[in-house]
Length: 452
Image 1 (tube, one colour):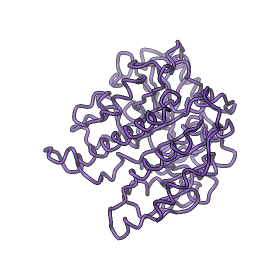
Image 2 (cartoon, one colour; image 1 turned 135 degrees about the vertical axis):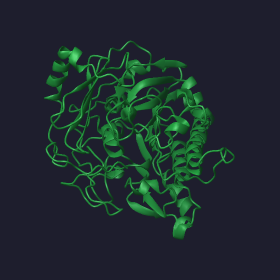
Image 3 (cartoon, helix red, strand yellow; image 1 turned 90 degrees about the horizontal axis):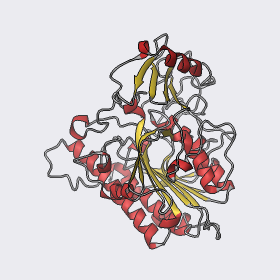
Image 4 (cartoon, one colour; image 1 turned 60 degrees about the horizontal axis):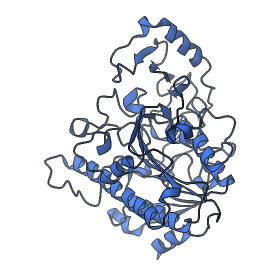
């Protein structure tokens, strides 16, 4: 039976036997989850008790940022530690390069052999590496597939367009397509999200001797909004799609609970650091219903706070302080150097992130003086910068830089650029050197929006 083969594959490699001093690392990432879609971040209608408990046992960050405002570049920043002015994949599609994707769309750009991922760094340090869910950084049989970028085991969607069919008839298992016959001809018997959780649980069991790195990149609650059941919201007076959206989040929460329970059962919780985040700001499809992005400006696809700020929770008993709220600003580019330090490994030199291990373990770490950078070339070059409490946005073309003081104006409602010419000059100087040109996303030409 194919599903048996699926779970047997996850146990082929044993972890290193003597690694008690180095934590296992689990990074769980939702797809298009807004910063206020979780109870612990203020959600009132959608139930997320397990993730809320995770936050109570660890630290909840309120000013953490994705690598980009859309899927593929955000994941590229996460994997490479390079911001969108340097990383390989800077958008979902490019008009001037890339390959044709599984869904027939053009311009999919894969990671190359010379790109160094966090999985490669950890694998070199002796970690077993597994990934399941959504990849988006290389089509099949290219240099960008997970197995060619440092992951020992992989199950999921390479193509991010296909990832939004939660009843797909095939997904990738390592370098081959894995058939899901229960979903053929419109069948809805194998919910892919459930398979990803099964892979994750079996990966943990198989590598419980450690150390291991598990990247659990869920594909929910991204549209299409569909779930095996609308429970516990089937009787709510909401649009059906809103019920499905909420049900997807609560189902994911239940699966996070299963994972945490397994860590307890295997006595791995104390030596495992668990992260939970989202890949970008929420698209706010039910903004009035659920207040996905709260009062933050804009949404997914835009470089204002609503498109970039994401929930992020970290738990590591006796290391990461429990029940703590942190407003220290950091972003996905920091993941690679942070994980490298946790593993006792050396990160690559050409990265933009820095290790935030001191922040994670509750030590004083001043991160306010550095620049956090984002760009997108959907319609000319759009840039954004976070420096100290300042958020600057250059909308593109010859437009002037907008400036917002996030300390007093977190909604980015008042452009105070004219009142702070010194800050504008500092940021302008930085922007002049923040990026290198990309052959796939040249700043002088518009590229496809592709906000999937």
